[in-house]
Image (cartoon, rainbow, N blue to C red; front, side, top):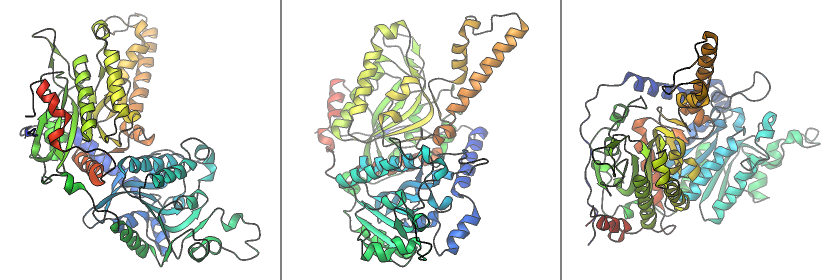
Length: 571
């Protein structure tokens, strides 16, 4: 009988604390707090004065005791201003999204931030909501909408109204979720104007507080409303939509009652299948502290490290089955458990690897060669066939280049891997540990290949190539073989130096993780000791529902066939 044998991986880490890593971690905490504050305490108090709860307090009241939201897209629009000069900020695009445990079930929450322009939709707000809905659709987990939205931020309507990823696409995703049988529950807490009024309607259950209203157009836009002393509450409050239009299901007195009602609906859903798929195993912490990841992974992107030490700090009990360890050493693939559940792991090996055709020769890690690409493609296909979720730990400079790589058909092998990841049905989760460069970023299930989520760290650098490398390429005709400036003319040298420095600085700024998160190229920046929490949530959500995808029991895994054929692993 085939059996999964997980063996200890990793060891004690004795490196001294890294001051730069600590500084980067502190920067992340500070910026998170800045975003969470919305438009500031004055606006939190303004919400409370209306008898309502600020959005973050609603989320905390909704969550199971002892748990908290794992936020997504915290830094969308970070540092940008909108509208006429000097413009307004839109912290986190005015909406909070993330993973939340409610009644022992993972849910995805979408909550308008009522401390930012009464929950208005800004540029990228619709994209952020849609991204959360896409995750729910892929994982088949419930969506909870906490609606308190005064519609589009009109001075920027041209950037959020009409495009493919604009506000109207939210309602298409509402419909697709409904068609797929994914539960959607909405609580309406206040202003719900125009699109804000449409968002909850397709939900299976809609609750309205006594202060809530849903209208296509508010009283301010309705001719005669002023002369008739009509308010938006008169036009579309609970009296209308619960008792007359039937656009809502139940009225509740206040925010807390609404949150209790939502929890009551979630409790009626099927319980989580996670314990079933653990097959008798218990969730267990790694043997080595998560906090050590900050020291295990050097801040200098050119400094290698042992990627197995990273895996050892992410998987349960630091146990791992490495598959095909003697093939394609620049890539580590294998099986571990996270939260007691089987997961496939693919990681770039940062150390030197043996050259398969030249005994005694070594090749640098963090690069994809033919053997490694073929190994990853086989492993990815097998995990998909077996229904095992995949975790991709990226720290990659790109593909091998040069005459030998082209003769070996690396383009073709890379295309095979890309095809595999593009057609996989098993959930995939991507972590950008440090470098995410070139086509290697694509091949390792980068965001264009639709993993459920792609998270980064304070060290993440995302781009085609580093700034220095790109500057050398841009000014190559002015440089010798050692990349030194050829000209002896001081004026020309100064001009080339300034040009290269400008290119390098611009590219480095583009690769900054906060800039990537601002543009939604990263779903969230997390601390190193938070990576496992996000992976645990993702993997549990992948197993929470049953009957929506094939999940083989371990006796009939395709991975065992690979182990036998290559005389490795399973037996």
